[in-house]
Amino acid sequence: MSSSTILGFAFVVFALMLTGLALTAREFLKVSEDPSNRKGIAKDSSIDEA
View 1 (tube, rainbow, N blue to C red):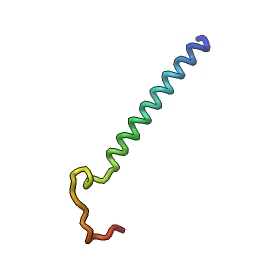
View 2 (view 1 turned 45 degrees about the horizontal axis):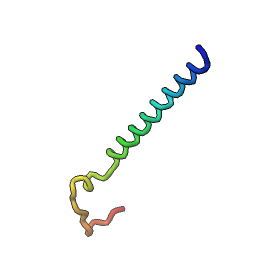
View 3 (view 1 turned 180 degrees about the vertical axis):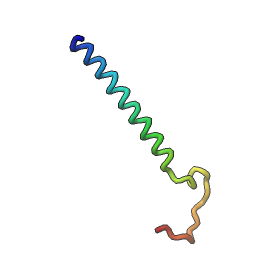
View 4 (view 1 turned 135 degrees about the vertical axis):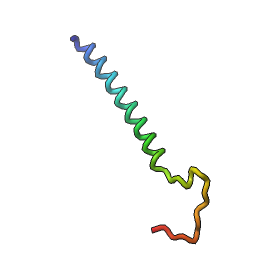
């Protein structure tokens, strides 16, 4: 393999890795958000959060 072919493969692998990282971060943020914000439930001000 020539060095330009290896560089091309490295670029493709790097691009796929960045895409996977971005998608993983997006899914993590979806899962970790507070579900009450999504459903539109108002917070009860009488309950103190620890």
